[in-house]
Image (cartoon, rainbow, N blue to C red; front, top):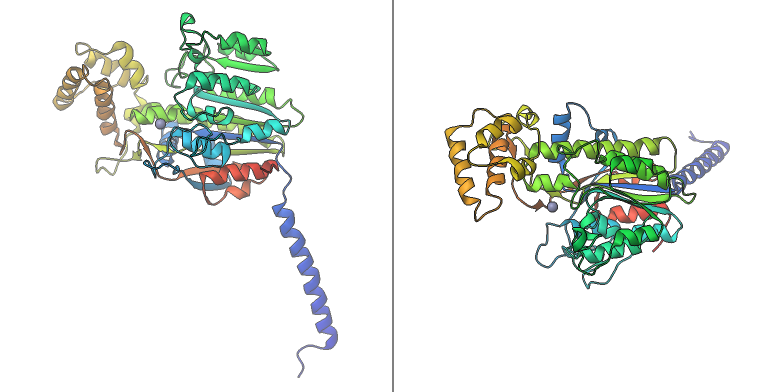
Length: 448
Ligand SMILES: [Zn+2]
């Protein structure tokens, strides 16, 4: 018996041809998603999985970051002859900004110290508005890599000039000291007053939350602190804007541009608190970063042309939930802390009053004899080691909370990647940090 007649074979072939046309036209359509008009890149500096878990536990609810459909992971290693597997923020930021791996301390220059074009510069060439928002000094590594080129991240006076010359539309963060002269209380040795220069270039300059909120358009330079912005746990909310408020203002202004915009938002001090093993302060800065993610995501969800990427440049501290061999974690210890360890120590701590201060600011009223001896030793050691007291306080609190730390520096573990919007599915895989730049460029439809 013949299985198929000539006629049925013909029909079958026709059906296969129709199906293959449908399939082949479907796949290219999915790959050729419309370019993103806007890209918002949010970077949690030092925010590994431990920091995210800590933020979620301390918030007592899901983070906005938990809700992304497209999730990936990224490797972060630099191209550094000595520090091969562990990046700093400059090399990692350069990878995100340019797609090129470089040595630690490089600000968007390659291993030969040659400038490499950043995605912000491509966005400007394509007529888009641009913005940089951070809780660090605006001249610090992560914002700097998008709008300056320098062989050395510490050259912040030079970086400030370069960033201003880049004419970024919105610059919000800390770091006023690199914009004013020594006479004005700043760090500039060339006598230049970059704030006056910025005003002459058409920028509105603001230093407070209220003044920032009054600005509705044009170029905006906001420098809210001489150095870094406050940790969120220490922030005076009446004077200093939150990261979410700065993000909202930047989006309001940049979204007026008809060609679209590129915005980078950095939760920059998750890293600093993680260097200091100050888990309560890390948690508050993660939650503040997550609030900024929500602002970006709400904007993107109100339209269909905005790609939102959330990632980290690296992990800091090797933070673990549970430590010291304990199968436990005690967020209640961290929730009793009222200010950052750095803030408490800077203004209030002495060998005479430390027990009262522990009770008042850290909620700890039962320091053990061992902990008391450790504190008294630390006050003596402070004369030669400026971190002795803060390290001891952090150690006492972390051990009580079972928050584990493996390093005072960065670690080379993978970091989270999340995406929403046009081309977001590209990010749902393991990738290298340079791929994040490549995929953002692709989403914008830019070619190098
Ligand atoms: Zn760091």
